[in-house]
Amino acid sequence: MSLPSRASYRDIPLYSPSKVKCGVDLSDNTNLFGMPPSAERILRETVASQVSRYPVGYAPELKQAVARYTGVDASRVTTGCGSDDVIDSTLRAFLEPGELIAFPDPTFVMMSYFSKVNGLRYAAVPLQADLDIDVDGLLATGAKLLYVCSPNNPTGTVASRAALERLVDNAPGIVLLDEAYAEFARESHLDLASRPNVLVTRTLSKAFGLAGLRVGYAVGNPTLIAEVEKARGPYKVTGLSERMAAAALSEDLPWMKARAEEALAIRARLVAELEKLGLKTLPSEANFVMVPLPGAPAVAERMRQRDVNVRAFQGLKGIGDALRIGCAPWTQIEAALGALRETLR
Image 1 (cartoon, rainbow, N blue to C red):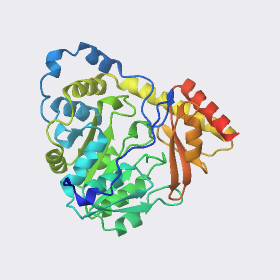
Image 2 (cartoon, one colour; image 1 turned 30 degrees about the vertical axis):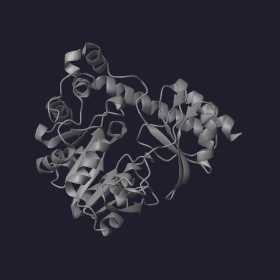
Image 3 (cartoon, one colour; image 1 turned 45 degrees about the horizontal axis):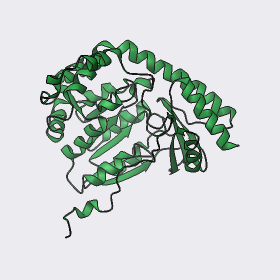
Image 4 (cartoon, one colour; image 1 turned 60 degrees about the vertical axis):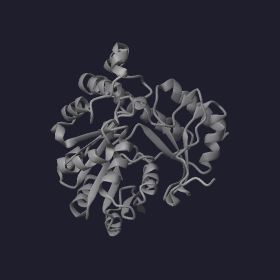
């Protein structure tokens, strides 16, 4: 019997990056320095009765915590199952199937995937030679929604303030600014969320060390937020995740900032060690570095054979093959450098 399926889905592969269990895994850009103390306390104190009931719809406690952290009213906040869920919900909220989204190339790999599963067309606009976004190129697409990730994943580079302002001022529709790595960057652009056509998404998976909880959020005009809420559904954040995330946002900002500073110090040491190997990294303002390297996928595979996992990219526009190496406690970085040295011999 032939089972029914969506014709538009037939050529969409399952998102499944190369993943082998390794003793050292630097492939996800997550916080490997532990979890916020208050979140750990909530986890220990959770009782069975809290697990057997549905959470409160639309995560009001978490919204309030995000609002305090970002300095906005709670009406300007929505949450979701990671920031990628918020991004996916935003596409459903504002774009009809067949409409166009545009984003830089390279950028977050899930953008093309989300476009396909939502029946959208997409235009990938190459970054400029200096790795800033090509504002004219993005605007020339006429796309109803423009997506920019800054600091950008996978490059670690940032969009300049001037470029972002010009993009927002001239966009024909919504600008979706992904700041998943904002806590590591020198400058945040969250204030742009005060504009009527801008949504800024963030996550607790990176600097806050809560990737396993899957908590993300967006800040924007209440009218935009209300539409995203319709698309996301009421129970996208578990009750336990909401309590742990709200505690981390309310009680552990000093802890988070200290871990972020530690990651950046390690990033600087990592860059210096890579330079000793004759490798030049892209300028990064995230908790990872990108290393252009011919044959990067094969290098990554040989590193996995040495119990170290890093993310490999092949044929990136304007960059070529490259490795993306996340920051972690220095003992893990030493292991990764050792595996890389052996691989490059």
